[in-house]
Image 1 (tube, one colour):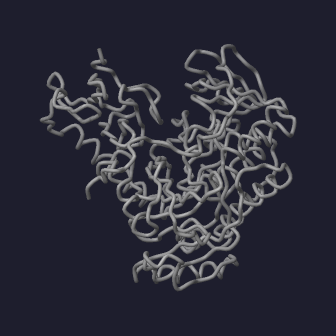
Image 2 (cartoon, one colour):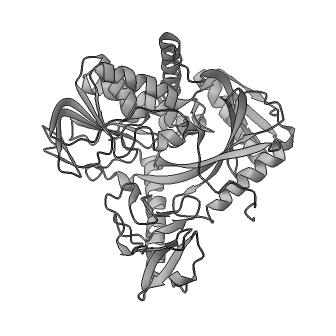
Image 3 (cartoon, one colour):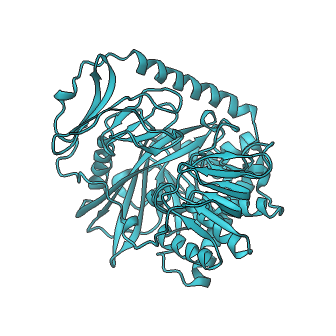
Amino acid sequence: MSVPENMPQFPKTYWREIELPTFPALNQDLSVDVVIVGAGITGITAAYLLAKEGVKVAVLEAGSILNGTTGNTTAKLTAQHNLIYDELIQHFGEEKAKLYYESHLDAIKFVGNAVKEKGIDCDFSYEDAYVYTTTDEYAEKIKTEWEAYQKLGIDGAIKDTIPFPEIHAKAALMMRNQAQYHPLKFLKALLEDAVKAGCQVYENTTANTIKNDASDPAVVTISGNRVTGKNVIIASHFPFYDVPGLYFARMYPERSYAIGIKTDKEYPGGMYISADEPSRSIRYTPLNGEKLLIIGGENHKTGQGINTIRHYGALQDFAEEVFGINEYTYRWSAQDLVTLDKLPFIGPITSDYHHIFTATGFKKWGMTTGIIAGHLLRDYVLKRENPYKELYSPSRFHADPDIKSAITANVDVAKHLIKGKLEFVPKDPEDLQNGEGSVVTFNGKRAGAYKDKDGKLYIVDTTCKHLGCECEWNAAEKTWDCPCHGSRYSYSGDVVEGPAKKGLDLLKEAE
């Protein structure tokens, strides 16, 4: 498909249109009870819960608070994670499948209760959630999933269609009393309460490694400062300290896209997601007295697939066909991590590390899973019981599907590692147009080049600093993305997203 000419060429998300507090960078050594690395939904929820218990907490954020995956979500609070419950029953049994459902309901209740008790203005509303299909194949799968709902006592119903005739849905499964909200407004309120309770927050403070990790862990920052704590919580989306648990081999990264539009059509309420491909997600949010429709989807593995700009074009075509676009001013993308068995990792980083915890692999459902993680991590630190510890333990292993998924994932990594090394690149850096990036040949070797709008040229070595795969150009975000484990770099080589810690080598900088 072609890229629509009228598509906005600027990444902009309405989540950022609120004023957030700012915090200094850490410039000294520090000693606390708990060190939390990452100021997204998990880190802030855990900090809030622990600080309210009188625990001395420090939060370290590599950039600005709430500026990563949490700031680029579509913000559904739901236990309906596409068609998953029949699969969970098959792999783990009814008891664990029900625990999974109940844990996400608990997260929704926590947000709803906090909004009511604290009077948080965050556009919170209860909405029914629907997963729908336009194919006969998935209509049968929806019937099977409905049977799983009934086994688990999930409050829902099966429907013949959804209220968008242009979609031609053949079946839909509804889950009642799910929710939506503005996550930054909500988390800002929790953070303010945490700070009042003594929590210390440091922005632009990048964690590099952990020392004395067995008994007295200390987070060492890029600048060399040490933050010592009785416990360390790694809430940095991808664990920055991943070697002990080999997390890079136990998850794979996926990118997804979203656009924000206004339409003259009346929106009927509810949140919708397609079971079949291409993936489509639909919901609304209040914005300046109107309803902004958020259309999402177009999932693919990071660093793999078509020109990324075209994913926005596909969403725009869908929105125009179903709703008609009156105004189109927002677009953004996000990166999610998927574990081999599709359940998140929340708990001790390995069974041998009792004072270092992680929360990662949330797939597309971080708004509820991050809340679950905050509560679970609090209970680990305070040595309390929690019914969900075993379900989400990072040390779990299931022969099916873990082995099958691991083989598939590692074959995919090997394929892209070899492909990048053998690729013939005929393009020269000087061939680029302003605003264009591409893999090129520079000094006889594979490299990556970007020419900015003023014609200045940046050339980097595209070899990922994590495990040596060759990065690919992401035209939508103007980044270099690794197709093996999801590391991302700016066009000048700076790290945007881990697991890589060091930037790409800059071979030629704009003059």
